[in-house]
Length: 165
Length: 148
Ligand SMILES: [Zn+2]
Image (cartoon, rainbow over all chains, first blue to last red; front, side, top):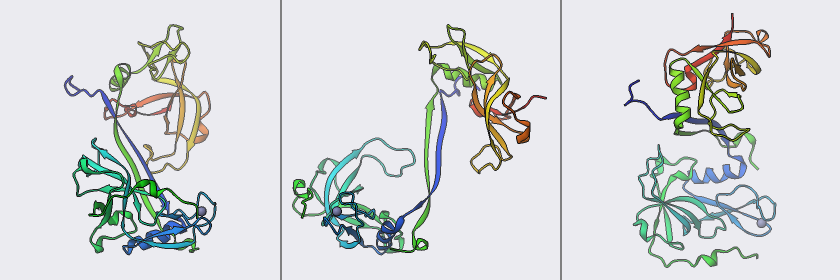
């Protein structure tokens, strides 16, 4: 090997193959997602609504057995502007990952924000899901391409704090 | 609650394709492998670490005195793999073994094959077999086999 070609690093690929079993709560959720519906699950004790649901309320320790249909609108609870490319990721930086709080939900989930200059994104901004074409829907929240801002007044995130009912 | 058979299940693959910078000392270790040499590092106490270590875990000194060890050595411990999985580099039954190379005071993890499980003992003598393809990696040692 010539001096020019010599590498000062070693390729160290890490690879983990596994099977994910969704469990009954997530299976129920993903079966609805495949139909383009977002259905959270509510705690029978404290009424908190979880989306995506994991099957139990961490506060009360009981099964979340009440299904709660939700809209695909909500607000940005928190966000990060990503400037550093990740190898293998097809999205070109800068792009925005945000914690999305859907209307009526008590927890948020991570998704992409597009359709706006990254400098203008702010906490509390109203957003709505942009869905892939129906024939591409699978058992995945990737059925939503991203969320995009809608022309509604910002939400005061302090109002999102959970109130014991 | 849904039936077990109705649960969604899917295969996933988690992969990171990252590059690891070898650093000045370990680069020499990997370059030596391409020349079919195994290097260790000697500390001021006379102890030889193989594979080469950048620091002495006992005296905490930075190490740079490279010495050649092996290619023969002694099995200090091993774990027999009767049915290799698809990600194992050896398709026949083999052992992962800690091998204390001649001239070294520490042992190195590698593979031992071309033998039966009963042939392997703690204390068995093995020797390095070299790969036909040189990549400046630890896999340039293809595996170890029992010394004839
Ligand atoms: Zn609860």
